[in-house]
Length: 86
Image (cartoon, rainbow, N blue to C red; front, side, top):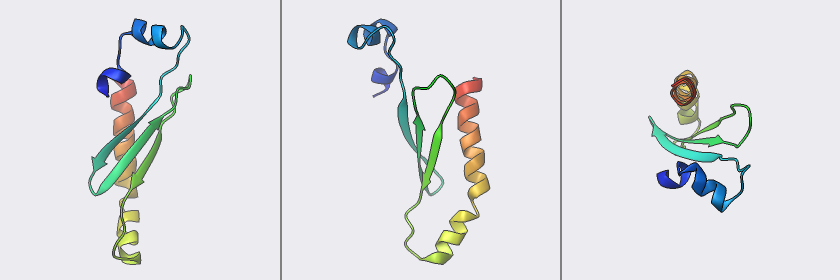
């Protein structure tokens, strides 16, 4: 998959057209979450983060995970800084 999303520019132009646009979805683990980051092919920087967690224990477990909101936001900010600030 990595070679598909970072090919030679000429290969993408040949396969699609001169004005192609690339977006993508990245999945990774963070703590107990599965994180999905969607990066649509827009002119502006736009990233949608979804932190997924399988709740098995009921509402107490939901409340614990909601308390980790700040940690998930920090992780999202860290990912964006690495991707776009170099």
